[in-house]
Image (cartoon, rainbow, N blue to C red; front, side, top):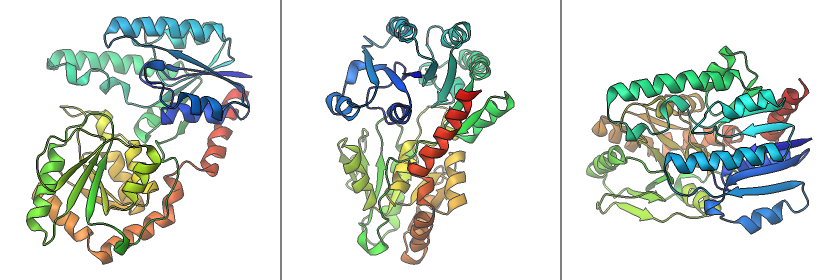
Length: 372
């Protein structure tokens, strides 16, 4: 068997989510991995890792940021997808200029197509670039129509949250919930081992204004300074209790998070309300819990709030009320309450980490789809 893993124009070779597919499928199949070669980070190390596996790497360089560059990328990617003559097309994205092409062509060529959905598509691409409400609404309606067709034309759907999972179930597609789990776990540190610091980590540009307001209110009410470390994100605040930290390798970042009191998830990705934000389960949510650190989640994020309250691994606050949010966070930082969060993380940490049990369950789903 041969599986073509198409990462799409937005993912480099070392993307955690797409590389996970390569890792899994290489255990039982020949794999062709097609990705954006613009940032070939750790290429030699990754290639060496799969030296004894039947894995071929095809990097395509996306030149520029416009629609033309995406269209050119799509054309070259499709040529490689067809030429590799794989039995299964495992796609992490669609073609921007012609969204249905890869799904229609899979049907036409009698290929199995499995669609792994990272984002709620109707409210993702180009959201912040559209200021006209009418155009935005039309764009969302069109993308919802296409998104449903993509799901309907897939042999199976793998997705990150329950909202999209429900859409796949309604479309009668075999579906699997696979959140952006942490790559490994760290034994949670106790209260006394942690610094009196909060942390916010990431790489995608975010609006941190709500976060700044909350940390400011915390320091107005706290007897001792509570620092916020912002890792990998642009910090636009000059406040003395906010510390900017450059992007760091994953394992190092996990160690950094493990020594903090809480991870803050109180940002905005879009400049307007978006289901892609509301139902998101970003990897940094699971990275924090994998690192053994409780989370502070904005109630705006319904899916993260659901997980946080279900497993008792942190605090849900309303970022639109920074004064009340600060009071709630300071209460949660008291040792008695904090120790409960640590106990709950220890009891449930396997739910937040990519481990052997998760791998076996996911592979069982994939093999079931391939047999039908």
